[in-house]
Length: 359
Image (cartoon, rainbow, N blue to C red):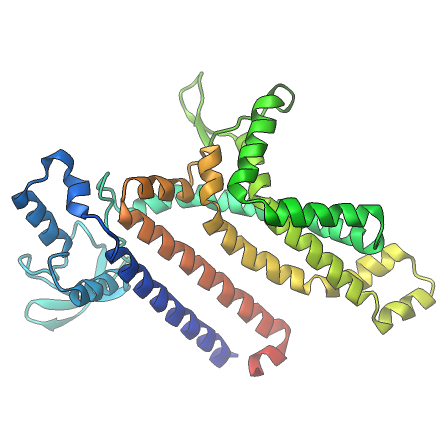
């Protein structure tokens, strides 16, 4: 089992290394100069050269890449001379010294450094820490809605196979849930329930998890702002869960032990709940675990439509201003979440089914 876990973690590290490499070279071939973004109207030759030197973009691309890996690595090598490009700068890193590798060089254990925003000069890690919880709340709420409603409707559709209800839910799942882009669905839902029916629903077309109370001036949690974006973001996984639950349950209901249960006179409810459902939900659980990671990254447009101040909203703002460190940092965080969730799911499968460990 230990070998299996280490193997999965190794695969995850390789995937992250590939993602980091692609992100670095992709964003370094994009047009635009970070110095002009940072300096604005104050940009002149001397100032631009100073910014290039500070960011290290005046150096060969391979050296920039190695420095980027060194910044992201929790164990990294640095110079202690403040005149050196590889200087262990206290304004960038929070570290714990491990051992010296020379008179003016050392190995340290540190928090990965995601660089700073070109516009606000804030560390990207601080921006992500501030915004990621709101995105996580939105993604978790969406997947809970999709799971509960989707499993229920999938069971009903399997029991009522080929009925008008089954066909209606299938049309909804394929046309609205799967075909419509999330930003278009979000605009329709915001317009319908946030404007046209707002006097009945009491919902706003825009707002975030935390808002300022008009009376006290304090920051309060506004859960009603979560309803519309969570429903919008959950529509696509809802469609997947409905179809997976239906097809998996129909397959399980054809098994011999189900026919035996029917022959013993057990009711349909008992057969579904106590015998069929627990075996039919395996592919559904797999899909839900994968979709949660996907929703974290896929919330970008939904957050923009509903002005939800999560990491997706920050990414859109950063793209509009060419603030690449935020985009690169957010992409790495999303990739890391994907990898971690996949590793956890694989390990759980290995525990539940020992055959997985030997494939």
